[in-house]
Image (cartoon, one colour):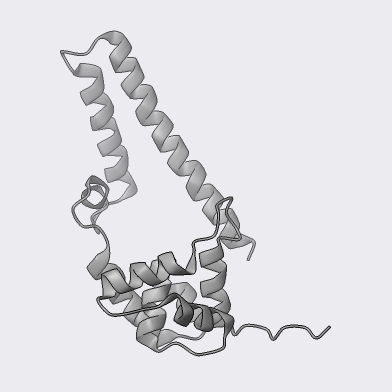
Length: 168
């Protein structure tokens, strides 16, 4: 039985991220990615086109590649590493334009945020919880536990992501 041809690196990256091989999650269907690209980019993008790009059967334009990379959560560095510098540049523009700008998290993570500023913000939130006049001691304790648990969960997830990247 002949071995199937190996995917080009850029196609393999998109396939790997869409199928989420490193995560305990089901793969994202081709149609979902194609629909996300079409809806956000504003032009027709079909699942069959994505299948051909992922398989290496056809090479995507830099613009198409950048949009698909965005839809599967690729980073510009990953895109550059597989030999698509122009697509990486376009991906940076897409991320800048289509990343949520109005969330609390985006406001907290302004470009000038430092570790000291994050610690200060955490201390302020804890103090706000501890000094809220209308909360019962049980409510304060519950809110404080929830805040700390969320931070711990975030740090664990960052740790897992770092381990995944180290093992590539």
